[in-house]
Amino acid sequence: MNTTPNPPRPPIIIPYGDTPYALRLTPDGGTELIQLNATGHTTLATLKPSQSETFAYHLQDAIGATR
Image (cartoon, one colour):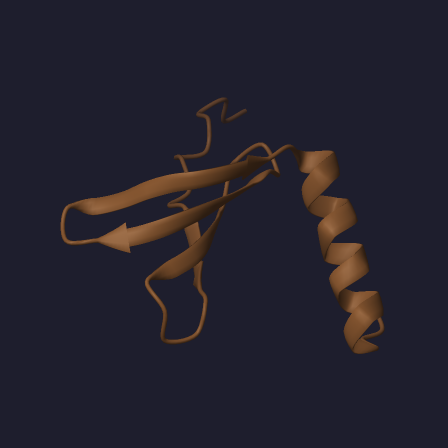
């Protein structure tokens, strides 16, 4: 039996159009609003997993998307 843990996944970063902003999905299911810059990024806001789920639900509802 292989008990080796899976390697950590790289962060998922979703750019926000042509702006210096992006959403970074955290390993625990949360989301961070980040501002990208020459040295990396600055975290502007952090959402807990439950807040991220609520935000995604309301966004999909507002644009008429279906699951």
